[in-house]
Image (tube, rainbow, N blue to C red; front, top):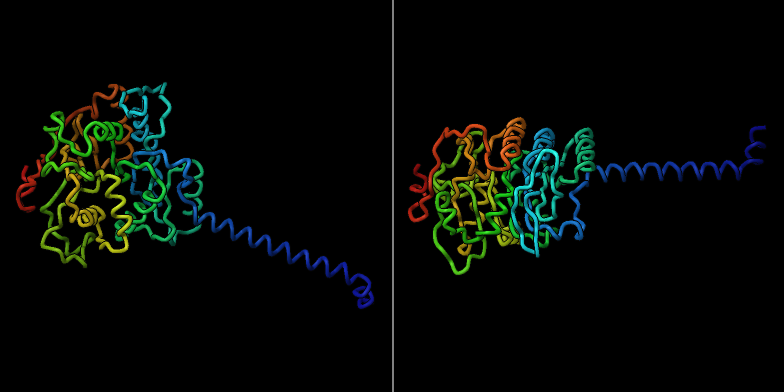
Length: 363
């Protein structure tokens, strides 16, 4: 009876089996596509949406630092709304209030840079949701996020920026525990960059010489006498250049011009990398003669904050609550005050560009 049943309904059974396997095949492939999409989520690279930006803020972050990223989204990135254009000229005007904020013009774009290689499914799911909500993550599929990979992370991010932000003028790099006066940095760059030799800046900056004209800018708080770490977290096993690190701008926040981004991107495969990305940046730019290296005391970017003053452009080592406190003070004072109470915990120094690096940094 069973055999006669099979013979009678053979075609129907074969068709059912065929469609069953087709369904399984399609289901598995859709699942695989979902997994690929989860791993390959990147910052939007459509030329129509990114080509217009002239300033990019590259914020080094980690997979687990969403609270820090939200604090930045809710505080200092909003200051970019103080930058606007009139007749194709970039201008600055304070226009912030709690209740009314002018729509941000597409001059400044920020990205949180995160390596996603070997992340578990739960962390990838969270990052994908965050990207869908905010669209401000630059996710690097082929890089495992760790301290030892910071220089590689910077190289990959710079290559992406070079390939996708076609109208770039300057790139501002910072960490996700830095508060950045992005509005004033852009204002300074528009008015004074790359020469930075205006009388209004003499109380804050030092640089080596004037070239006719500069082909780039490397601007931050420099150190030229730092000893090379031979043990511990910052150990540099491959360092051989000299007994000190080459002069570099401290990584809590610095600015490089498009010319430097292009130079590093085009030569990334030839460049040495060291544990600290800011040390690496100093090495990568060391042979460049046509750039202006500008030391600025308004960059509070050392391993520990030097205190707080109204003139600061970057303040490193800030918690999420610190971020909101600084932002609140700026809002209440219409941008006139940066901190409730100004204080000096450690002295800054002017960089001596005319002597050996070991004599650079006397307070």
